Length: 511
Image (tube, rainbow, N blue to C red; front, top):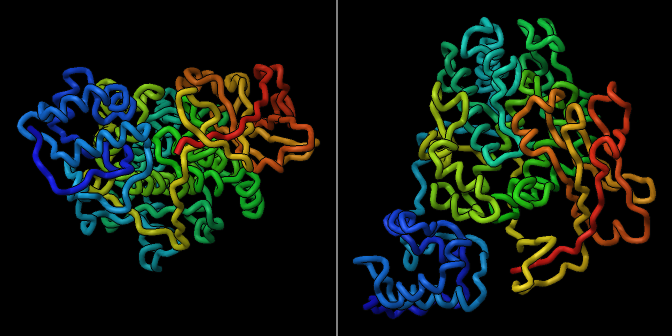
């Protein structure tokens, strides 16, 4: 028999607002043995009828039957069509306290700050740490050369993850490794790595030593010999490139998403116009070294640039109440995005080479709670802005779903591009009547066919979410601009990359 309650059921419950927090860790562990993942929206939706019968009859959870209002809330969720919704503004501990939602104490954490807010003393200490590791012998594991080399060169240690679910976990571990190297310098034990908020101008402090460039102490490859000096575009050009590629728009769009794959974009059918696109376009906007995956991490700006992506990931996790394993898993679509689910559940896939078997000895589980597990937090950006969640939009939906059509915006997708045919990073420019109206970029190595992640995800697409008026009344076309123009010039022939196609879709809203 269920526990009686005088509290009324929630009339309009959602997955993110209430349902995901109705199952304890004991419940989840018990049902995993039965093949049912209670952290999975799709699994709970698919088996909702069975779950309801068990909880309504007081059979589940064992020894802790749900009160009547919980049972009624779950039934309302079913009758309302299993809406996903958004997280509650604050945790509803009175009604749905099955999972602890209380954050670890951030007062003892390392705090990474917006680089424009550092004091003179903090900046001097950071310069001291950077200069010291740049001067270290390349064979030293804490040297700048070794730490930057983890991102790609020197081969064959090609560890970096891009365009795959491990992208954010791997780079979070990478930043810990680099920050620990900085802190290994005598007198610099309290240094933290600041971030550059890429939606703001390029910081002046990064335009002077030791943050403006780095000279290779030994060869990274035949193309990058000892003495190679990292380079950037002019800072006016960088600003214009970031604007042209819509990086701020992509960041804001990502922060409005509730699902893991939508926040990242690119894989599992998600549109390619959120965080990964912003990351790729940012790399390609900054200049010759940052455009090239083989040596991007040797440009000092890489570390402040990537610290920002980790900050945004953490901010999104906090917004989604996804700072523990269960919370994070509830944002992942187990059916359409099984690999993302597996990297946190399958021991063999939790490895983040080379940072799992060697210091800092982190895997995908160890990086989830930045404050509680890593002891790392982020200070707010100097010009911080909060982005509200927006209703989920899709290009296609199951016919059983109820939806609304967004009449004022469309998604233009350029698909069918075989990126293995294009040596190095490139941009795709969408044109109307031969005038560019939007651009996106993809960041990849010149030796693209030697990159396992690239080969696995050879076919790519680009998404442009635009006002309807921007595409009506004209002829649409695309051209692909490779970074490496020595191969074939400014425009890469479409037939050589798979003869891509353009699709225009109305955006469908399900909530």
